[in-house]
Length: 140
Image (cartoon, rainbow, N blue to C red):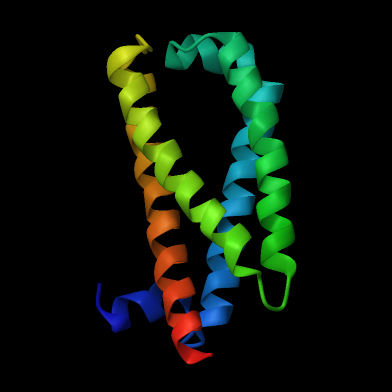
């Protein structure tokens, strides 16, 4: 990925600021999805073809996850080890989403599109967080 694209997406040339922004965006999106899954698990479950209980469980998890990532983003210098856990967790979530689509879930068309789309978004968060962490570590 070119440095120009990376700085355009991050809207900064400062790696630590980019890392904090990507973590914050991850936190906002995760918390928003978590709220939707908790508050609307029944209608979303029908729309996506995923069980209400599954969405409710994912929603609760995502609320806690979003809060933890938001806490990391709020730190002036996010600690490397927890950031790496977030990055690896995001890659794992993206991969397991696709595996679940093939092996476990029988979603509607809207659900299949949603699962693939959210996997791509989460993988993108992981990639941008990883690049920002690498760039920040190289400056220290």
